Amino acid sequence: MTSVDQHYEEKRNFIRMFVDAKVTITDPETGQVYDGDSKNLSGDGVMFITDNKFDKNQLLTVDIRSEQSKLAPLTAQFEVKRVIDLGGGKFEIAGTINSVT
Image (cartoon, rainbow, N blue to C red; front, side, top):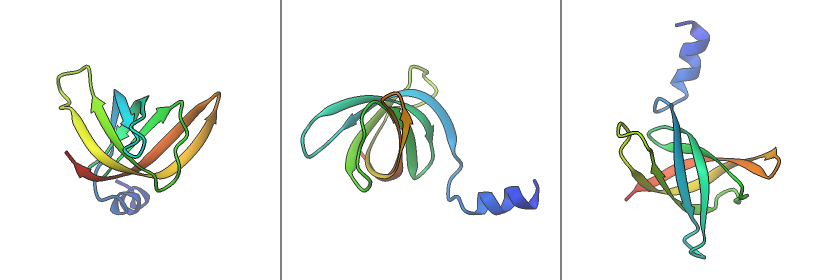
C-alpha cells in the first residue's frame, strides 16, 4: 500500500463495498416511494442512482434488497449529504446511515 493509499483509507471509518442492488427510497414526511439502484455501501453510508432529486440534509428511509443471497436485506434511516446531477434525469445520491431498522 502506498502512502497515498494509506492516507486516503485513514479518512474512512469503514471499507466501501460495491453493491449492485435495487433500492426503495421512502420520504417519511410524504410517504412517497421511489426506486433506485444502489452502487456502494459502507458501515455508515450508502450511494445510489435514482430518477428523483432529493435535497441535501433530507431524511429518507432506504431499503436495499439484493437478488443475490450473499447480501442480507437492509432498511435504514438515511440523511442525504451529496446530490450530483448526472444528466438525463439521473441523480447520484450519497449520504450517511443514521440508524438501521
